[in-house]
Length: 162
Ligand code: SF4
Image (tube, rainbow, N blue to C red):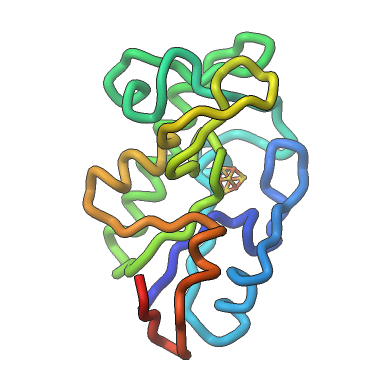
């Protein structure tokens, strides 16, 4: 059983601001012996740490893949291709390994599974999936955010209740 996890939830400082967003439940899964694969699609797409914050403008992850929306930084730099490349690399690795479940950081333009920032850079969120989350859902993977993981019962080497 392999759990693929947004790396920032495990304490890896890969966020745009050079910080992590450690989640105790996710960390406990790892410390309990569950096999965990950390990934950061934005870093895997070639973006550095720290980096300028970016949001999806003109839609959600779905529209990014359809070519109808872009990922832009606050200053207007287009990072759409880097976000898509990072998502494809995560997908490629996870298809080779037998990932059972993804735990993704909510609100991220890459990893959000139900909420993302709305593209106004004002802190407001909207319903929708990030660039990575959308492609994973389309491939049929099971996705949870860091809040939902609190409700998952687990025992070493096995996860039940999702
Ligand atoms: S892209 Fe995902 S893994 Fe990387 S910092 Fe953002 S939320 Fe965390």
